[in-house]
Image (cartoon, rainbow, N blue to C red; front, side, top):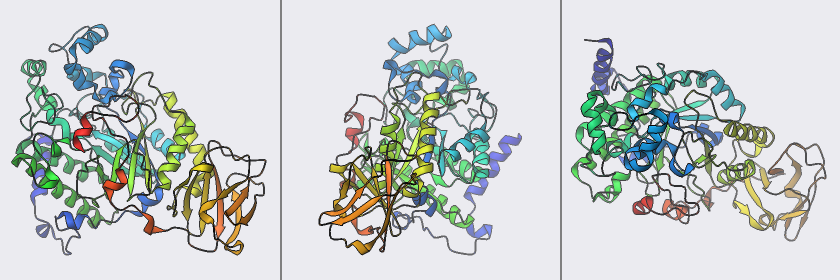
Length: 538
């Protein structure tokens, strides 16, 4: 038996051993039910840390291109075969061949990560104010960025020839950052198929020809369709990640099959294969949470999508570029600097100001800001993304007290003065989103007495801030010298009372998500409210 096969055998064996035989003396906190998982607490590191870095990096980064120049470039591996009239000529011009003689599998050797320095990445993320990092362990394309014994299509055996997930994890741990290798395999079984999100999905014609010419490609492009074997492999891959790297967070993308092809799994309507998938996901999450408890680690999960993957309360709400309009139950926005998550050459990027504003608005409404970078195939981060990371970090160094460890106030915003609010203990932070050139009044403090306010200061400025109580609330006169901040200015108001008010949350997730933008699962950049595929999931 080969060494890697032996490791796979041992891993599979350990997965199946009951905890009682392994000497577990105490009863695990989660019994395998959704009801138990709904009681999982929000870890302090997540609730206090606020800022995370998301990383989409894989063989698709070699391509760095998408028709129209906008949208999710990490989806191009399948789009090559969906739109051959456009992409085949592109491949012919760049690589000299097209499918089925040359396909996505043949691009993988160019994913070398030859300039990658995980220690430099970890230092950068710490410097710019992130408290946790989520890097793609496997996207929908079937490529594993870790040292996997379960697939030959992994970063140690091919491409970079190194353990990307493991090496980054070690570097992050040295910086004291939390880590989550993200897992997107839930859509792989139809990613290269004739029809997406079908239980009995079948490969596209040129994919089938590629596999016939190169049988090893079957384990990259396939399996096709939702079957027990696919689900068991799905769980085993995550278990391998969990066992080898002990992540702090189980990040899973939204799972369209729950509400496609005649399924409505959360309402109890599902084909047998889909129900098995759903049940195994519950078991997988339970095992992850119990494993964290056994290690003494505070771990957490996400609940992705407009239609959530799991019952509400199981992890934080999440959508791409999510902007709740209300203070919601704990949530997270995985946010792009541009239009793509994966590397896209000449992407259209948001302004630094809009990124800072989005960040503080998310945090004021009980959200976390998970901002994405899409490195190039060689492991370098594009300059526009680096510039925005450094600008974010500079702002956070000045305004961090209004962000880290903060909680929401009774109001998240005051539109007429372009203010958003956070709190920390007896401190209220009024963050002004336009340059504070004139006096302004916080109407949410109407009824306060002067003795309730101990003082007001502007973060990043030594200048004195004038203030007084009026019938309409606390009136602040900004100093002429605004100090070190740019894009948004944080006024720290020291009071005599606790300012956090936990009873103002819109606890119903459906109500909290109402009015937020649809997410197109294919990453089309149409601007405004996106229609189409995700609409069917609502």
